[in-house]
Every structure is written in C-alpha cells, then in structure tokens.
Image (tube, rainbow, N blue to C red; front, top):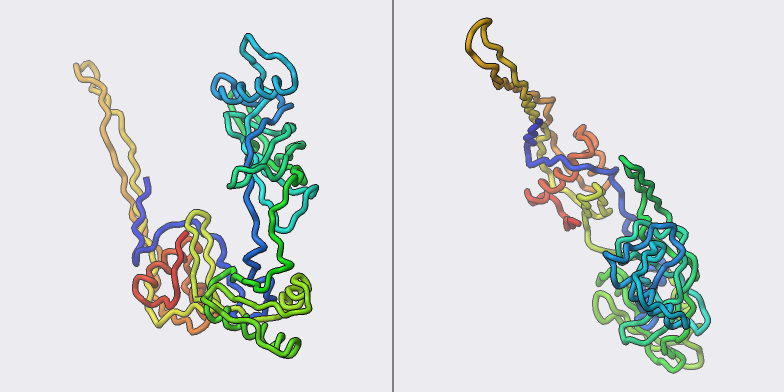
Length: 372
C-alpha cells in the first residue's frame, strides 16, 4: 500500500501535454466567429428497430418493449403474430437521433445516429427499419432507414470478454430522407441577426465595425449595430437578395477576442492555456513524500513436543522516500514564458494541473480557471 503526501496541495492526476490556445489577434472570418440566428439546426428523434443481428440483439424477456414493437411492425405488414412468445435475439430496440440543418428541402438526405435502448450487446451488421423522426413540436420531418455502421466490436468466450469502442451505437450515413422542411423564408427579411459563438463585447464591436466599414463603401450607409456581447443586428440594404448580401459580409476578416482562461479537464488530464493568461510573480514548492507500507505476516510454529498452536504473527515494513524537492520562482508575463517556467520546474505532467489550481488559490493566476 502506497500513501502519497504532496506538498503545496499537489494532487496526482493523469495529464496529457499542454495545449496552447490560438493567439489573440489572429484574424478570422465572420462566418467562423458568428452564425445567423435564423440558420439554426433542429433536433429530431425517433424510436425504431434494428434487425438482422447475429444473436446480439435484445433479450425479449428483459426488454418487453422490443417484442411489442416487433409484433406491431409485423401486424402493420399484414402478418399475424398472436400466440407464443418470440425468442429471436436478432432484433434490438434503438433510439434514432439526427440534426435537421437549416434551409433543407424535401428529398434531401441527412446522417443519423442509432443507439441501443435495450440490452443488446452489438448492433454490428444490423439494418434499421423505417423509422419516423419527430421534432419538438411532435411533427414528422424525416424518415430513417438503412444499414448501421458500428466502429466498435465485442468478442466473448467462456472465461474472457474483449470490447473495443462502443458496439451498441452506430451511424447511418445519409440514412434519413427529409419529408417536411422547416418553414424559414428569409427573402422578405429586412434584418439579419448574427450571434457570436463565443460571447465577447470586444469581438461584437469589431464585427459591427468591419461590417459598417464594408457597407459604408459598398452601399453608402452603416447597417450594423452591436446589441450585447453576443448579438449584432444588421439591416439588409434594398436591391440585393438576402443570400448575396450575407455572402458578401460573411468573409470579412475580424480579430476575435476573449477573456483569459485556463481550461482543465481532470477526467482526461487535458490542460488548455489561453494566450492572454498571465501569472504574477510567485514561488512554488514542488516535492513528494512517498510512504510505502508493506504487510508481511509471519507463521510462528510451536516448539517440538509442546502443546502450542501454529499462529500468524503480524509484521509490517515501512519505508519513507522523499525525492528531490524544488522551490522555484515562476513569473509569466506572456504565454511562452509561463510554459517555459513550468517546464523548468522539472515537474512531471501529472502535477501541472495541481500547480495551476494552487496558483489560482494564491491569487497569482490572472485568468479564469475552468474545471470540467
């Protein structure tokens, strides 16, 4: 048994290499930092059956809804299914999800995701039977059907089982046909509303200024105004279509901005440090005390011809080990200096997350620490 005591509140957490965010001031197109409010996706969901599985489907005793759905499907096809319980294991109940893109017309195809609902072990080799997909308003907007593509697999023997990926979820590329479009006529729209993907007042102002500079020279008037940190409202000029006007302004270049953030994902051990992150001058002590406790019980035998009994005598061995600890002064006026300072500490990657948390608690991290 090993007990670790980490100084300066250093925790032992698995960590991947540090990723550096895109430098502030890098120019991006408006279409990359903002989106049209009217051009939004709509989520679709449906319940269906996947057939043709090789004995890896739902156990009908444990998933009665699968049997009910199978009987209902057969009755709709004109096949009587009364009497007796079905024992087939090549059918699985699934939930089908999809995103309906904006401006799609009837007859277009979209990709769908298929996920097992019962106790099926794999959907590999199965075929999704015709499944209606509904939106939040309850209306049917698409119908899905096709062969399910599964990237994961599962193999099982008498004493061991191997599973790689997720064999109970898959995709059907172009598996749904749009039967009803979402009414979104923009030809008569006089106002365009842009929403920033990452809310920021500076970016909103820069987007509005870039659009006004273009429309001022192109149409002789300023047409954009920023409303808040996320919304920019644009008046569409007369004599030009909606699609052509937006195509002209969506490729304008702007410099996006944002607050300084350090994003830490402790589950995967990922750390992302933004370009504007600064650290005030601070001293950091990094070291670890490892105490190893080993239990080695001994068997004690009685003397010959005695009436004693064999007993177990406890024996414990304790070894303390303290590797070289360092005290370093860290000062990060810019991102490169900060990363170089962390590397100079000689700390292993599994301690960088805890160091950043300790610096934040000490008030020396001039950024928002986001824990995921």
